[in-house]
Image 1 (spheres, rainbow, N blue to C red):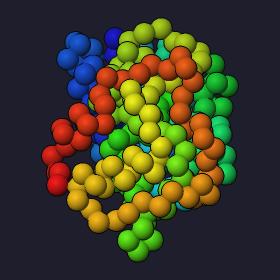
Image 2: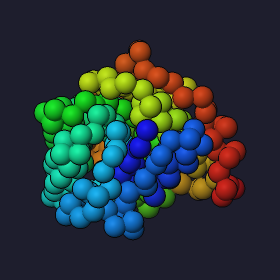
Image 3: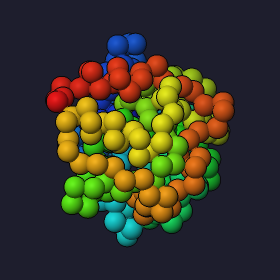
Length: 251
């Protein structure tokens, strides 16, 4: 199969491209650096010639409400129209577990629009909703820090390693379209505040986490199960300790 990976040079995209090539698939890693721009439409038609599958793992460069909505809406419209014209048989998109429960956040409202456009496009599809990546724990700590205190909601979270996300995206890409949603998560559940404190302690970071039920997560208030998947989710194999031990920069 010819498979085009949109966002093919990013954290997940590069891993997806490498795994598909190891399987002998014909893969195009499409990104702005390779001349493919889903926001303007530049390079899309040429990149999709002969493609059976498109995997979209691109993310917005801005999380501000206006730009993030413009990115996901415009890029999705361009990409899905180009896929329909090229006869693409399967659109695989990466989304977020609990997204529909966090509509106070501009980012997750934009992801909802992306999903709605996919469903309405007529292109057979699979939406893979992932829990938060372990690689973003440090970012969550940074944006939640006030002085030496990190204020975080103690809601449940089931983080997943990017390697497990990539494996799930590859499986979806080479499989038949679900015309529905697949949820994926890591093998362990924590509270968000506990997870970040564990990470900071391992790094010997002096910041302390304060559990605050009303602390917002990317602009949204969380209930206990907002960030965790349903019982039938696909679970990755990499736990937090194994993931942390594999990271190149540790305390």
